[in-house]
Image 1 (cartoon, rainbow, N blue to C red):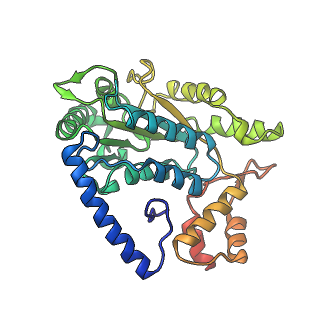
Image 2: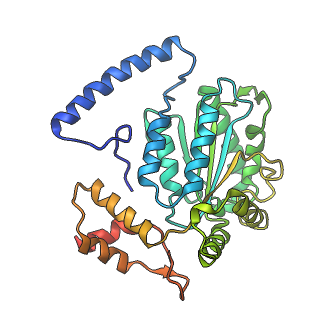
Image 3: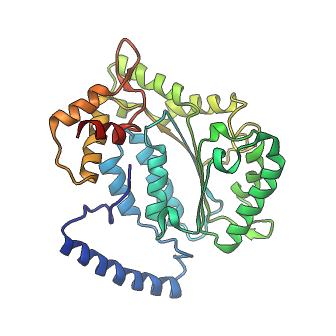
Length: 321
Protein backbone atom coordinates (compact mmCIF):
# COMPACT_ATOMS: atom_id res chain seq x y z
CA UNK A 1 0.00 0.00 0.00
CA UNK A 2 1.40 3.38 -0.97
CA UNK A 3 2.29 5.80 1.78
CA UNK A 4 1.19 9.27 0.74
CA UNK A 5 0.30 11.25 3.80
CA UNK A 6 1.55 14.40 5.46
CA UNK A 7 1.85 14.01 9.21
CA UNK A 8 -1.05 11.55 9.21
CA UNK A 9 -3.36 14.23 7.80
CA UNK A 10 -5.39 13.53 4.64
CA UNK A 11 -4.51 15.48 1.50
CA UNK A 12 -6.97 18.24 0.74
CA UNK A 13 -7.71 20.50 -2.20
CA UNK A 14 -5.12 22.06 -4.51
CA UNK A 15 -5.10 25.16 -2.33
CA UNK A 16 -4.66 22.95 0.70
CA UNK A 17 -1.73 21.22 -0.96
CA UNK A 18 -0.11 24.57 -1.70
CA UNK A 19 -0.53 25.60 1.91
CA UNK A 20 1.00 22.35 3.08
CA UNK A 21 3.91 22.81 0.70
CA UNK A 22 4.58 26.31 2.03
CA UNK A 23 4.28 25.06 5.60
CA UNK A 24 6.63 22.19 4.84
CA UNK A 25 9.17 24.59 3.34
CA UNK A 26 9.01 26.78 6.44
CA UNK A 27 9.30 23.73 8.67
CA UNK A 28 12.33 22.60 6.68
CA UNK A 29 14.08 25.93 7.36
CA UNK A 30 13.31 25.69 11.07
CA UNK A 31 14.45 22.08 11.11
CA UNK A 32 17.69 22.98 9.34
CA UNK A 33 18.34 25.72 11.89
CA UNK A 34 17.62 23.26 14.71
CA UNK A 35 19.96 20.71 13.15
CA UNK A 36 22.67 23.33 12.84
CA UNK A 37 22.56 24.52 16.44
CA UNK A 38 21.01 21.57 18.21
CA UNK A 39 22.25 18.10 18.95
CA UNK A 40 19.05 16.10 18.40
CA UNK A 41 18.88 15.99 14.61
CA UNK A 42 21.63 14.25 12.67
CA UNK A 43 21.91 13.84 8.91
CA UNK A 44 18.29 13.87 7.70
CA UNK A 45 17.02 12.08 10.81
CA UNK A 46 13.98 14.10 11.90
CA UNK A 47 11.54 11.80 13.73
CA UNK A 48 7.83 12.53 13.75
CA UNK A 49 6.65 10.03 16.35
CA UNK A 50 3.15 11.54 16.79
CA UNK A 51 2.67 11.21 13.04
CA UNK A 52 3.86 7.62 13.11
CA UNK A 53 1.58 6.76 16.03
CA UNK A 54 -1.37 8.39 14.28
CA UNK A 55 -0.71 6.55 11.02
CA UNK A 56 -0.40 3.21 12.76
CA UNK A 57 -3.63 3.82 14.67
CA UNK A 58 -5.55 4.75 11.53
CA UNK A 59 -4.17 2.35 8.95
CA UNK A 60 -2.59 -0.74 10.53
CA UNK A 61 -5.44 -3.21 10.99
CA UNK A 62 -5.55 -5.88 13.66
CA UNK A 63 -2.05 -5.47 15.13
CA UNK A 64 -2.39 -4.26 18.71
CA UNK A 65 0.96 -5.63 19.88
CA UNK A 66 2.88 -4.36 16.86
CA UNK A 67 1.55 -0.84 17.37
CA UNK A 68 2.36 -0.85 21.05
CA UNK A 69 5.84 -2.37 20.75
CA UNK A 70 7.01 -0.27 17.81
CA UNK A 71 5.84 3.05 19.26
CA UNK A 72 7.06 2.29 22.78
CA UNK A 73 10.48 1.10 21.58
CA UNK A 74 10.98 4.08 19.28
CA UNK A 75 9.91 6.63 21.86
CA UNK A 76 12.36 5.30 24.43
CA UNK A 77 15.17 5.11 21.88
CA UNK A 78 14.70 8.45 20.14
CA UNK A 79 14.23 10.39 23.36
CA UNK A 80 17.48 9.00 24.78
CA UNK A 81 20.32 11.38 23.75
CA UNK A 82 22.91 8.67 24.48
CA UNK A 83 21.45 5.18 23.96
CA UNK A 84 23.56 2.32 25.25
CA UNK A 85 23.02 0.23 22.13
CA UNK A 86 21.30 0.38 18.73
CA UNK A 87 17.57 -0.27 18.53
CA UNK A 88 17.01 -3.79 17.16
CA UNK A 89 13.50 -4.96 16.23
CA UNK A 90 12.50 -8.26 14.65
CA UNK A 91 9.10 -8.35 12.89
CA UNK A 92 7.41 -11.74 12.50
CA UNK A 93 4.17 -12.91 10.97
CA UNK A 94 2.19 -14.27 8.04
CA UNK A 95 2.36 -12.64 4.63
CA UNK A 96 0.28 -9.49 4.12
CA UNK A 97 -0.14 -8.69 7.82
CA UNK A 98 1.69 -5.34 7.75
CA UNK A 99 5.39 -6.00 8.39
CA UNK A 100 6.69 -4.29 5.25
CA UNK A 101 4.11 -1.54 5.64
CA UNK A 102 5.34 -0.76 9.15
CA UNK A 103 8.98 -0.72 8.02
CA UNK A 104 8.11 1.76 5.26
CA UNK A 105 6.33 3.96 7.81
CA UNK A 106 9.41 3.91 10.04
CA UNK A 107 11.52 5.23 7.18
CA UNK A 108 8.90 7.86 6.32
CA UNK A 109 8.45 9.20 9.82
CA UNK A 110 12.08 8.98 10.97
CA UNK A 111 13.89 10.44 7.95
CA UNK A 112 13.05 13.40 5.74
CA UNK A 113 13.80 11.40 2.60
CA UNK A 114 11.85 8.32 3.73
CA UNK A 115 12.93 5.18 1.92
CA UNK A 116 14.94 7.37 -0.48
CA UNK A 117 17.07 8.78 2.30
CA UNK A 118 20.78 8.01 1.85
CA UNK A 119 20.73 6.86 5.46
CA UNK A 120 18.00 4.23 4.99
CA UNK A 121 19.45 0.94 3.76
CA UNK A 122 17.13 -1.82 2.55
CA UNK A 123 18.53 -5.32 2.00
CA UNK A 124 16.74 -8.07 0.08
CA UNK A 125 18.20 -11.60 -0.14
CA UNK A 126 17.10 -12.01 -3.74
CA UNK A 127 18.76 -8.76 -4.82
CA UNK A 128 21.76 -8.42 -2.51
CA UNK A 129 22.60 -11.99 -1.43
CA UNK A 130 21.29 -14.30 -4.20
CA UNK A 131 24.08 -16.93 -4.18
CA UNK A 132 24.66 -18.95 -0.97
CA UNK A 133 28.03 -20.06 -2.34
CA UNK A 134 29.25 -16.46 -2.00
CA UNK A 135 28.35 -16.09 1.67
CA UNK A 136 31.90 -15.29 2.76
CA UNK A 137 32.12 -12.53 0.15
CA UNK A 138 28.72 -11.20 1.25
CA UNK A 139 29.91 -11.12 4.86
CA UNK A 140 32.86 -8.89 3.99
CA UNK A 141 30.70 -6.61 1.85
CA UNK A 142 27.93 -6.33 4.45
CA UNK A 143 30.36 -5.58 7.29
CA UNK A 144 32.06 -2.94 5.15
CA UNK A 145 28.74 -1.41 4.08
CA UNK A 146 27.35 -1.13 7.62
CA UNK A 147 30.64 0.16 9.02
CA UNK A 148 31.06 2.72 6.25
CA UNK A 149 27.54 4.07 6.49
CA UNK A 150 27.64 4.30 10.27
CA UNK A 151 30.86 6.25 9.93
CA UNK A 152 29.07 8.64 7.59
CA UNK A 153 25.98 8.90 9.82
CA UNK A 154 25.32 7.22 13.15
CA UNK A 155 21.58 7.86 12.70
CA UNK A 156 21.08 5.17 10.06
CA UNK A 157 18.26 2.69 9.49
CA UNK A 158 19.04 -0.82 8.22
CA UNK A 159 16.12 -2.94 6.97
CA UNK A 160 16.66 -6.65 6.32
CA UNK A 161 13.75 -8.20 4.45
CA UNK A 162 12.85 -11.90 4.11
CA UNK A 163 15.21 -13.14 6.81
CA UNK A 164 13.98 -16.67 6.03
CA UNK A 165 15.82 -16.54 2.69
CA UNK A 166 19.18 -15.16 3.81
CA UNK A 167 22.24 -17.41 3.54
CA UNK A 168 22.81 -19.02 6.97
CA UNK A 169 25.77 -17.47 8.76
CA UNK A 170 25.59 -14.11 6.99
CA UNK A 171 24.07 -12.25 9.92
CA UNK A 172 26.86 -13.19 12.32
CA UNK A 173 28.86 -10.24 11.00
CA UNK A 174 26.22 -7.90 12.45
CA UNK A 175 26.53 -9.17 16.01
CA UNK A 176 29.30 -6.70 16.99
CA UNK A 177 27.15 -3.80 15.72
CA UNK A 178 24.07 -4.74 17.76
CA UNK A 179 25.41 -4.94 21.30
CA UNK A 180 26.09 -2.33 23.99
CA UNK A 181 29.79 -1.70 23.27
CA UNK A 182 30.86 1.91 22.88
CA UNK A 183 32.52 1.52 19.50
CA UNK A 184 33.08 -1.20 16.95
CA UNK A 185 35.79 -1.02 14.33
CA UNK A 186 36.34 2.56 15.49
CA UNK A 187 32.77 3.57 14.62
CA UNK A 188 30.18 4.95 17.03
CA UNK A 189 27.04 2.98 16.15
CA UNK A 190 24.76 3.19 19.18
CA UNK A 191 22.21 5.47 17.49
CA UNK A 192 21.50 3.13 14.57
CA UNK A 193 18.25 1.21 14.06
CA UNK A 194 18.14 -2.35 12.72
CA UNK A 195 14.85 -3.89 11.54
CA UNK A 196 14.65 -7.59 10.65
CA UNK A 197 11.56 -8.88 8.81
CA UNK A 198 10.54 -12.50 8.36
CA UNK A 199 7.65 -14.94 8.07
CA UNK A 200 9.28 -17.19 10.67
CA UNK A 201 6.93 -17.86 13.56
CA UNK A 202 3.94 -16.93 11.41
CA UNK A 203 2.31 -20.35 11.69
CA UNK A 204 2.82 -20.37 15.45
CA UNK A 205 1.34 -16.85 15.77
CA UNK A 206 -1.62 -17.97 13.66
CA UNK A 207 -2.18 -20.95 15.97
CA UNK A 208 -2.16 -18.74 19.06
CA UNK A 209 -4.71 -16.41 17.42
CA UNK A 210 -6.88 -19.35 16.36
CA UNK A 211 -6.89 -20.89 19.83
CA UNK A 212 -7.81 -17.52 21.33
CA UNK A 213 -10.73 -17.22 18.89
CA UNK A 214 -11.91 -20.75 19.67
CA UNK A 215 -11.75 -19.89 23.38
CA UNK A 216 -13.89 -16.79 22.69
CA UNK A 217 -11.08 -14.47 23.73
CA UNK A 218 -10.62 -11.12 22.03
CA UNK A 219 -7.40 -11.03 20.01
CA UNK A 220 -6.48 -7.82 21.84
CA UNK A 221 -6.24 -9.95 24.99
CA UNK A 222 -3.33 -11.95 23.55
CA UNK A 223 -0.17 -10.86 25.31
CA UNK A 224 3.42 -10.73 24.13
CA UNK A 225 4.28 -13.35 26.75
CA UNK A 226 2.06 -15.83 24.89
CA UNK A 227 3.62 -15.41 21.46
CA UNK A 228 7.24 -14.37 22.03
CA UNK A 229 8.44 -17.84 23.22
CA UNK A 230 6.85 -19.66 20.27
CA UNK A 231 8.37 -17.18 17.81
CA UNK A 232 11.80 -17.55 19.37
CA UNK A 233 11.61 -21.33 19.21
CA UNK A 234 10.49 -21.25 15.57
CA UNK A 235 13.47 -19.06 14.66
CA UNK A 236 16.06 -20.88 16.77
CA UNK A 237 15.01 -24.27 15.36
CA UNK A 238 15.07 -23.10 11.73
CA UNK A 239 18.46 -23.63 10.01
CA UNK A 240 17.19 -21.65 7.00
CA UNK A 241 16.61 -18.47 9.00
CA UNK A 242 19.11 -15.62 8.89
CA UNK A 243 19.51 -15.69 12.68
CA UNK A 244 20.66 -19.33 12.61
CA UNK A 245 23.82 -19.55 14.74
CA UNK A 246 24.40 -15.81 14.37
CA UNK A 247 24.50 -15.18 18.11
CA UNK A 248 21.90 -12.43 17.73
CA UNK A 249 19.14 -14.28 19.59
CA UNK A 250 21.45 -16.28 21.84
CA UNK A 251 23.04 -13.06 23.10
CA UNK A 252 19.60 -11.42 23.52
CA UNK A 253 20.46 -8.54 21.19
CA UNK A 254 16.86 -8.05 20.04
CA UNK A 255 15.10 -5.22 21.86
CA UNK A 256 11.68 -6.48 20.80
CA UNK A 257 10.20 -9.44 18.96
CA UNK A 258 7.17 -7.92 17.21
CA UNK A 259 4.35 -10.35 16.28
CA UNK A 260 1.88 -9.69 13.47
CA UNK A 261 -1.38 -11.61 13.74
CA UNK A 262 -3.37 -13.09 10.83
CA UNK A 263 -6.11 -10.82 9.53
CA UNK A 264 -9.82 -11.57 9.73
CA UNK A 265 -12.44 -10.47 7.26
CA UNK A 266 -13.19 -7.16 9.00
CA UNK A 267 -9.47 -6.33 8.98
CA UNK A 268 -9.31 -6.93 5.23
CA UNK A 269 -12.35 -4.65 4.85
CA UNK A 270 -10.35 -1.97 6.65
CA UNK A 271 -7.54 -2.42 4.12
CA UNK A 272 -9.96 -2.20 1.19
CA UNK A 273 -11.39 1.07 2.50
CA UNK A 274 -7.87 2.43 3.03
CA UNK A 275 -6.88 1.53 -0.52
CA UNK A 276 -10.00 3.18 -1.96
CA UNK A 277 -9.21 6.33 0.03
CA UNK A 278 -5.64 6.28 -1.30
CA UNK A 279 -7.08 6.19 -4.83
CA UNK A 280 -9.37 9.10 -4.01
CA UNK A 281 -12.48 6.96 -4.47
CA UNK A 282 -15.60 6.81 -2.35
CA UNK A 283 -16.30 3.40 -0.84
CA UNK A 284 -18.90 1.35 -2.71
CA UNK A 285 -20.25 -1.56 -0.71
CA UNK A 286 -20.58 -3.84 -3.73
CA UNK A 287 -16.89 -3.32 -4.55
CA UNK A 288 -15.81 -3.90 -0.96
CA UNK A 289 -17.88 -7.09 -0.74
CA UNK A 290 -16.54 -8.34 -4.06
CA UNK A 291 -12.94 -8.01 -2.86
CA UNK A 292 -13.75 -9.69 0.45
CA UNK A 293 -15.59 -12.56 -1.26
CA UNK A 294 -12.70 -13.13 -3.69
CA UNK A 295 -10.22 -13.50 -0.84
CA UNK A 296 -9.35 -16.98 0.39
CA UNK A 297 -9.53 -17.76 4.10
CA UNK A 298 -8.27 -20.46 6.45
CA UNK A 299 -8.57 -22.83 8.32
CA UNK A 300 -10.84 -24.77 6.01
CA UNK A 301 -13.57 -25.29 8.60
CA UNK A 302 -13.66 -21.85 10.23
CA UNK A 303 -12.68 -19.69 7.19
CA UNK A 304 -11.39 -17.18 9.72
CA UNK A 305 -8.11 -15.67 8.51
CA UNK A 306 -7.14 -14.21 5.14
CA UNK A 307 -4.53 -16.40 3.43
CA UNK A 308 -2.69 -13.38 2.02
CA UNK A 309 -3.68 -10.79 4.59
CA UNK A 310 -4.05 -7.48 2.80
CA UNK A 311 -1.26 -8.15 0.30
CA UNK A 312 -3.51 -8.68 -2.72
CA UNK A 313 -6.13 -6.03 -1.90
CA UNK A 314 -4.76 -3.43 -4.34
CA UNK A 315 -4.55 -5.86 -7.27
CA UNK A 316 -7.98 -7.34 -6.56
CA UNK A 317 -9.58 -3.91 -6.50
CA UNK A 318 -8.70 -3.36 -10.16
CA UNK A 319 -11.01 -6.24 -11.14
CA UNK A 320 -14.05 -4.75 -9.44
CA UNK A 321 -13.79 -0.99 -9.97
